[in-house]
Length: 113
Length: 125
Image (cartoon, rainbow over all chains, first blue to last red; front, side, top):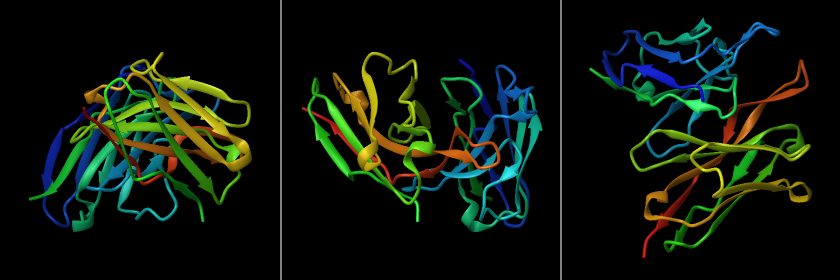
């Protein structure tokens, strides 16, 4: 199984500053035939189901603010939240959907400093 | 509007079986993978398995193999999760979710673009 490891486990960011979350997979999730990385990012707020933010490592889901951006390829990925807003306080998860079983990272909690 | 509707809560005793429904609407059910994700209290997301209703292809997470069955009734656009031999450690929130459909390729993938509100399952004697 592909193991997804996120870092850090938590971070505190001031309003308006950038939050950076890393996700590393134990093997590449880049599918060479399509040149796509099978990597998604989710946001989960307390008492709510997760919400898809990013897929194909860098494609923003419809309706997601452009302060959210994803990057990376192969085994190393990053989610950036530029100009953090109060409503961005949440836990963020990466997921690989390259190989079954799909797997999630352990989550990164973003709080306000 | 796409909707995935789950029962809000279930209470079971140890050793019993659980079957949760996920009633979908607002999209073509057979075109999308449907998956199940578990979240233990205060913990992260755990992938349980997925099913492609079009051909009934099913994949299970290793932690649940042998104890879980994912099925679907295409006639009512509803997916089901059955979990057997329940233990107190199965107390958790269970979510169903819809896989993303790439209209350009006609392929469905197992990143989840819509989620149910979750079913809180309590296993207690």
